[in-house]
Length: 154
Length: 109
Image (cartoon, rainbow over all chains, first blue to last red; front, side, top):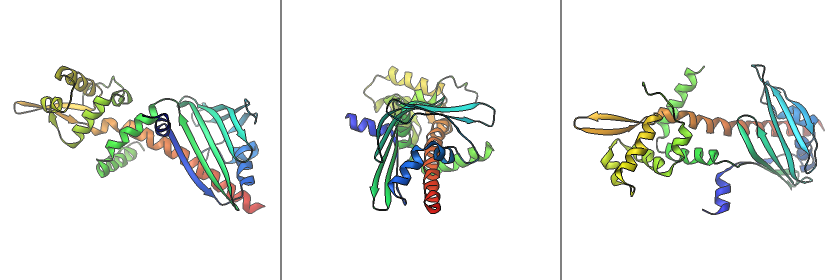
């Protein structure tokens, strides 16, 4: 298996064409006043503890959980290319540690081609994906089971 | 099911031979001999892998007449499946929120 294939397997990627100019998209992603507005899941709040937006600088967000604990996300910026690219390490303790976030911005007229990737260092994600391969064969049976589990856990 | 789950599902599916066994069994229940025939590894080695899979509840051995069949228990794999799905959804919804926010921002200008 080549390195490139391996990396692809460890990566979760989301691509969008955002209907706004790149300047605006970049600001919304990098300005902490904006970040607090969209980073947290609906109904949750985050505090920006640190936001040192330069290569080698650290960021740290904390999110109070309903059970009183704090969910801390943090990382160190590895690459910054204004209005083009951000690469940062990221830890989402305790669930996902040691990943890299790659965020790419590309001006597309009045719109922005936006690509967000989470590159996983560990093989957990790849393992889970491979496993999905044989779930496909079971298809609808599995979907039904999933629905049952979700409704039971409510 | 009375089996105590001591082994981790992710650990179970980390091994290519065990994944192959799960794949085979997801089509139909098979005897140990039938599984061993599909492999280059020895029968005792296959038996060892089956033991691992039964210990984490993925496979159950059922007696049918004189034969012992290995049967898959798909619900044991649910935690791993849900983990992946929720994880992916969490990022997708964050990026969706980001997009919505950007569009709002644009309309304010």
